[in-house]
Length: 272
Ligand code: KIV
Image (tube, rainbow, N blue to C red):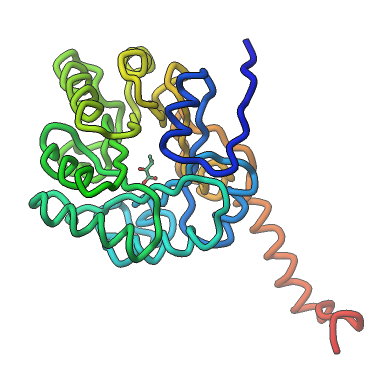
């Protein structure tokens, strides 16, 4: 059944709840810089995530752990300058919220004040409850993140599907309900069985956004570099590539190199 879409001039946390209640799916993509964020916003994406995946795709680190709070603020402020419509959510990076709730709040405040972001995202459930509460008490919207939480990669050991076993699935459901009861406005579920994700989405009234979590959730998120086919080696089953930019860009740049070498560029019309 097709759903009549309400136009949102500016997406807010309330718009997302409304979208869920109307059965309108939420689109979310990452962006880390001004130019990309401008395109993503103009294309009509509802939520832009300034993800700590910037550590991988922008800085070339193997994990999301090394990116700093200052670097996240730099990326987020570049994104904020580009957007007109999307809600901008910023990841609080590893090491900036786990040690104590006061530090978590200080990090969230820095993000909001120095970047102009609209909300923050934290990974985890019960174990970060006090931090989530403190940030929410300061009036800062919080998005949760459960399932595969890349900041805990060394605990998991691999990036494979999470919560396949009953005990982990049970804890995930409890954590999701807890995050909702604390006041989180949305939840990301990463790389978990589709059935479990659909069950969580049906139980929660806040929107559940999936990545590798199937179609039964309230929205989808992807890393923009993956969607555009700029990252060649990363090929999980859940990823749909809409372009093959790695090859297109390599070809275009190769052509430029050849044009310079062959003295074809610049031509008479391309100079003063
Ligand atoms: O950092 C990120 O890009 C994320 C998404 C994968 C949800 O957290």
